[in-house]
Length: 329
Ligand code: KG4
Ligand code: ZN
Image 1: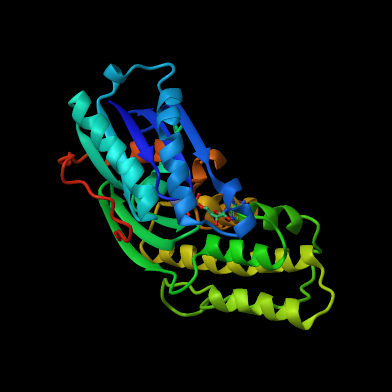
Image 2: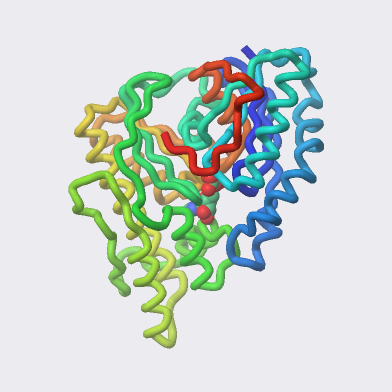
């Protein structure tokens, strides 16, 4: 089954065409992130206008080697996200589904991030039960999944999301938006053996699966105010370390508690190499299989929406699908 997935929840406009949930036939992503650089974060109105501008060219490009008649179904991320951005993808997918007479599957964007782990896989597939860690710009959630179509929310952030914290700390360190890649890059120059700033890892021993990162952000802010001269690379590295420590510890506790066979990580922050290395190391120690999407599929893309639709196939009435900004699980 060939599914065309549309993603427009935030500042990426993307269409991915995927066969049987795993084989990526085409994946086109256009991002307006550069336009938000000077504001240090996403401006919803700017993101939405850009979605309108690029959705047709993105569709055209993704169909350069396949024809509309080869598509068996359309899928769209209908939330959570920014309402103006969401509407563009949702209305486009509804139109495509209606004029082609093919089913429409409405997908939760966050579940899409989990299914980025199936893209491009041929042999070793994730096994259930699995614990999924979603770490994106807007979300930080731990989920338990026993089978396709069943997702139990274990916990999430009570304030800022992990990616959002990377972005805010990056702004404090005068790095450009999105901040995660910049923090990761300058961290490479830090002294990894000693700790100079002692940032907290909030809620690390809270005994539940919730996260909190705003205190960590404030701690970095206070350090930058208090100390006249800071070693930016060292601050970035120690901050990154504080966040990763909590993410890894809670994911491992969840995996043990629910006797998971696999750990699946998704969302923009899953592109972080330090997070990848640490989760891999811990998974190996605990005999768990651990999956990260290819880096290009960690960030928002339409292919992951197509994959999620394949494994959780449920037809929706195109006339009834609505952009749902605060969609939960
Ligand atoms: O999943 P995503 O593309 O969009 C949302 O659904 O929010 O995630 C974007 C987030 C941004 O906050 C960005 O700073 C973060 O992912 N990010 C990273 C890295 N690459 C992107 N965070 C840490 N390290 C990275 N290498
Ligand atoms: Zn996302």
